[in-house]
Amino acid sequence: QVQLVESGGGLVQAGGSLELSCVASGVIFRINAMGWYRQAPGKQRDLVATITFGGSTNYADSVKGRFTISRDNAKNTLYLQMNSLKPEDTAVYYCNAQIALSNFWGQGTQVTVSS
Image (cartoon, rainbow, N blue to C red; front, side, top):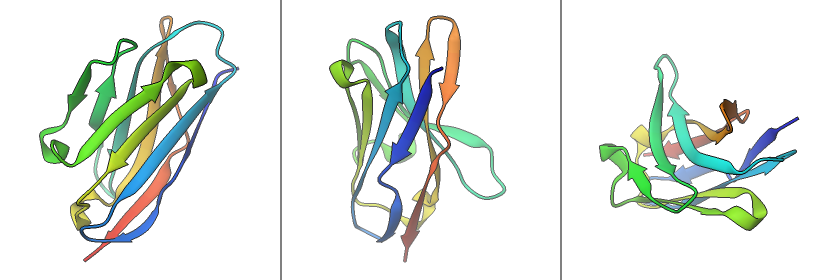
């Protein structure tokens, strides 16, 4: 049973930084693409950033230049370094992993940015 567990969320002031981590366990096959998504109250879940097994990245325009996604394939771990945080970054952040033909999600970690 594949499980994704996020950590690193919390409360931070605007302009501050946080680093999120996501550890995948129970993985038998290679993890293809991984990504971070976020959902603010009353809004849909949106893409933040994705990264392929080979390290190619893609970012939402709203986070380009501020967030950096990375992964450690040996540890089945995904990271998101978030700098220059803004109040509009407040959301629950979810980790996603594509394994074989299946899509897996973590439970989410709350990020709150105060003004």
